[in-house]
Amino acid sequence: MKKSNIRKTKFDGRAFAGKFFLYLFLIILAIICFTPFYIMIINATRSTQAINRGISLIPGKALVENYKSMMASMNIWRGFLNSLVIAISSTILSAYFGALTAYAFSKFRFKGNKALFWFILGTMMIPPQLGLIGYYLLTAKLHIINTYWALILPAVANASTVFFLKMYIDANVNDSLLEAARVDGSSELYTFNRIVFPIIMPGVATMSILNFIASWNNYLTPLVLLFDKDKFTLPILIALVKGTYKQNLGAQYMAVAISVVPIIIAFTFLSKYIISGITAGALKE
Image: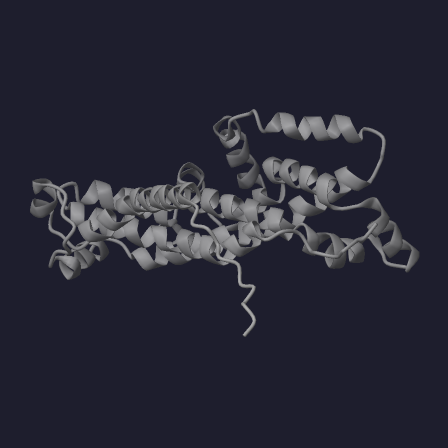
């Protein structure tokens, strides 16, 4: 019989120890990140007296009572729907028009290109609160105050999205790919929608998550522009829960737990685009 040529792999203790401690560190880090969310969910099922006694990892029995207390003075699900409509609409507008503007700054050379781009970057340094009074007067003149449009339309001009995607297009979209599309008779809008936009989807997804979270957590602007209680967003209703039930901590935790769900769902669906690379084989030099 011939001896088998199977090589025996040597056990590398250093490599094993390195991987072991790396995974151990990541597990501990994941537990640390998840613990606040777990405690928040647990506290939503506990009474105020139980919460005041200290932290517990065991669910309580006051879930239904806390939910009824939360719903007693306002419809939290109406606020949930209002925030969802505003956040999704704002995210879509910001993603598309931000990418379209970034594409223009990146691939078109026109007079004042750099000056206009630096002006847009300069607006990022101005706190949004400074323009709130002026925007309030503008929405009043346009007769869109106390409507969803007053909160959705500003997403069209998002300086941070334009800046990030402009840098992303510069690094990942080759000019020869666009020239090939133009030679084939493709219009600029068709080239952007069918070629450029799919390539920059990881960058768009990254900014979409950030914009969705910012819109979802926005408190001051809806508080100033919305008057009808039926149009209040979730952050405003959570503040009302906190003000109405100062001693009912369980109702507050219940409202906060509900408000976190869409953010987790949004990250779950968009995270695959963030970790994925750009389209493979789109261009070979």
